[in-house]
Amino acid sequence: MKKILALLFLLFFSNLYADVETANFGIEDFFTGEELKMQHNLKNNILSIGNKLNFNGTSMEDVVLLGINVNFSGSSKKDVYIAGDSVSISGKINGNLRVIARSLEMRNLAVGGNVNIMAPEISILDDVKANHAAKIWSRNIQIGGAYDSLYIRTRNIIFSKNIDIKNKVFVQSKEKPAIPLKVLERCDFTYQPPVPRPAQVFFSSKFIKMYSFLGLCFPFVLMIIFTPRILNEIIDIIEKKPVRIFFTGILLLIAVPLILVFLMITLVGAPLGLIFLTFYVSLLYLCRGFTCIALGRLILWKLKREKIRTILGIFVGTGIFVLLTSIPKIGYLIQLLFLIIGFGGVAYGRARMFFKMRKENLI
Image 1: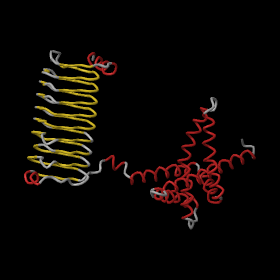
Image 2: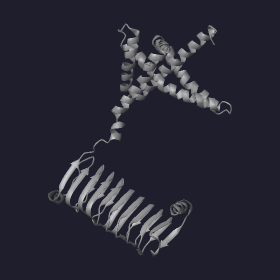
Image 3: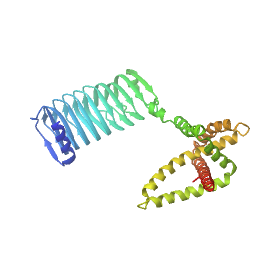
Image 4: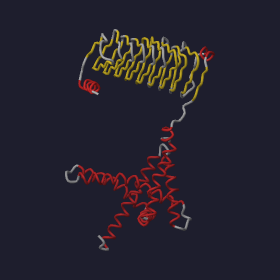
């Protein structure tokens, strides 16, 4: 624990330059600094953290390099683990290689074990050799070299004409890549288009539409159960006075933000302004639903039973609203129109109820 704390302290509070030439340290050697150069024979496990890391020595054990700019050009008898922004790798690694980077370049490299790479941008030259399986996750990759087996998941890939693969190639990419004929004749090639991941399905356009539909319907179903009078009153106002409601909504959408800003810049009114702003934003989201219900009721005008007409109007009007707002060029205009009418209807209805209660001395 003391070593780890000391390492973190040096990492965040030091600005060092180190030149490591010997390896007579403990069982595991920790190096940290702004710029590190590691060369000659290093007998122990190496962990280096810094801005610029340059390893061109020989390690008898595992090597772990964590930095912004990392250059490995030495050799390791065992495994090498690298994480960085810009990474360059060459030399000889007898064990496995694991890399996470933003951009990666590999040249003049021999790897005796397995290779696992994750980087958006990858360039692998023809003088790279991996004796076992190489697995690569990338966005854009240019790849050459010699491999036993190769597994790649990427968006775009370009194979060098000199690439050599002995046993198996698996590629998952946006388009089927062009592979040299000599590779296809020698090994088993499998291509697979991208498979939608759970997150992609979850956030797909169809799911978003369904979420918007249910998110707007649910509050108004609750209003039918708990506050049907308020709901029917607002819908009735929108249906009977649409022009007046429309201009009321425009006026309030301009005036209310100005009032809230004025409140929030005053010392006394700042807490009230923040509270009212929260209610205002929530109301803007919900008020579109009142316009949806009015539209649904208008479409279902032949239904005589008002409650059934309102319930069905919620789903019909909201469904039409969601479909219309998904149209690229007019979607935002539809959103604004429904928002203005719904906001005007809510404000007009609440104001009318307030004055009615005042007239009857209820408040």
